[in-house]
Length: 423
Ligand code: NAD
Image (tube, rainbow, N blue to C red):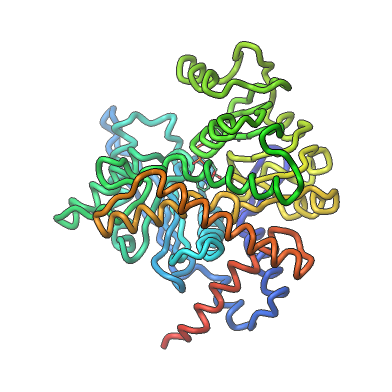
């Protein structure tokens, strides 16, 4: 049985959830049982030991993983997460979601994910760099520009991607910028990549607002998580005039019904290291933030935040999943019954992997685009994907997650069928 993760009081099983979603999509698609069977399993799972010298001279061994779920449609693609609760079931589920996500936005990749069991807040910068370099070297046997291309995820950033690119390049004996995306612009990163997931969430919100007859320029928005995804989508929503009533991070959040000044909040977080006690706002817990009355709720932190325990109390009209797996299957059913539109992670947060794809293309060609070109192409991809998913949702009378899964799983199954079975 898939391993349990604790999310507050509720129990959350990411792999069980991912497999159940695949079953639902397979049933709706009347998928060939052989193809269904094949798609249940990750193609490759690599577990590595990462022994590093800590700053005080003692040796510590960290555990790391890289899971390649599918390469039916192209090289594998997926982020690397540093978190104390990383485990093989979570990484496998995230890799499977990456397979469907790349297919939904129709970019030529399969799905993968990586993780290192560690708490980066308890490591020095040099320890983190040594963990990254040794992990890269260990997974170096299965990654590469035409095999598997990592990217940032929870607690990893452009600096970490730079160390990955450098380590892989040192081992290869020449620069290999296409091995990783989300890297600094100075070494072949793409303009617009840092903001891409948040920007994609906003493009999807514009489509969802249009679809539900909501005026986004005056909509009230609550965002859980203020890292790469949460803070960028908050800034972009703010610039568009939307009213951000609450945001939070792991230590809790802040709330103002009239709207928060996001640029000032970012300065406050930089200065104090926390969003607590922001002038003109009330402190609020993460659980209260999720239950605020608002037009759009963006969970942009971690998995398992909306469960059967709180789904009945959610008062948003639309939920746009910036994070991966924030809503459990039981919660999904409750929200659907209550008429709340949930735009699923595999569609809503696909802006990151889409611009990662653009970065990879630019790295391979050594020809770099203006940010406006990146954003314009991103918008086209996100809008097309949203509209295709809506078409399936209406045609098959299913919720949006199932519609997105049908699109993604269907495309991967077509590729698997056309490639045939080896040997
Ligand atoms: P990040 O590390 O930059 O930020 C994570 C944020 O979540 C931080 O503000 C942190 O304080 C907060 N957080 C962590 N644990 C929390 C908890 N228990 N309760 C409330 N808040 C908590 O990570 P990120 O890159 O912004 O990723 C956030 C989510 O988006 C993840 O699910 C990730 O898989 C997904 N995602 C990220 C990208 C990307 O390009 N970075 C792309 C697609 C999906």
